[in-house]
Image 1 (cartoon, rainbow, N blue to C red):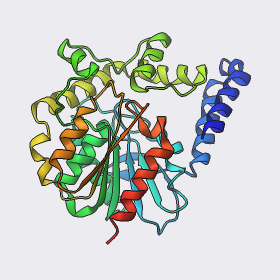
Image 2 (cartoon, helix red, strand yellow; image 1 turned 180 degrees about the vertical axis):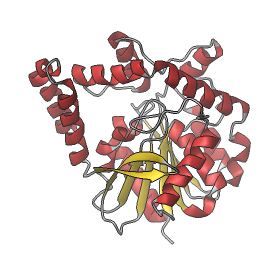
Image 3 (tube, rainbow, N blue to C red; image 1 turned 45 degrees about the vertical axis):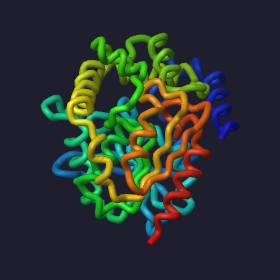
Length: 311
């Protein structure tokens, strides 16, 4: 993967000036390159009158792997991770409502329970059953909810630094939440740089024009993102899934970055102590987004779970 990351960095150096002339085209070029690298194509489906954009790749008759992004993320979080799957598995990575290119309806509730049922409707519309579901952070909260509410539809569950369960140690984000602060939104390029340092233990080189494009999305939807953040936070604090972990019957992989500042790594032990059929992997030198920081290592453990869960 490293040569590809440096290729993107080099592209940023060579073409940075073009961003000011053709910003949308340049960003689309980089995103398109990443998707091709992951062997993914953009698709969409209408679910209950709402258009869901998603990425799909791999053999149509392969086992289905569904990837759910975290807060502030979208389907484009997954191409470098998906490339480890798409030769063998059918990969689906949607934009959840409220994120990416999906609908942003301010009248909806965006807590884990509501988003779980929207995800279920999406999967039903695509006719997907017996899936391998994986989610990062907020996506892990939704995945855990899904395993509790629709257990018969899952072959495996992978929780990547998942939200929704109380840890024994408070993270930096949780301490900020106690003060009424949301550290997962940015208002300037310097602030966005701080945000990337916060979620990743070892930063992946990012062209400035890509950071600028991502920041513009955050600024454009700042109030809406803040609304979603507190809806998820309130639900996770008031109705954590900690006491229901014993009800999870799906074979589960719990994978965590040792240096997660968003959700403390102690949460991994809590989940492992609660779910009956699980395996726990702690990744060193990794923060909150292992599928981006260490895609090869994370995918290796994920694929091992898929192979072991075949009936």
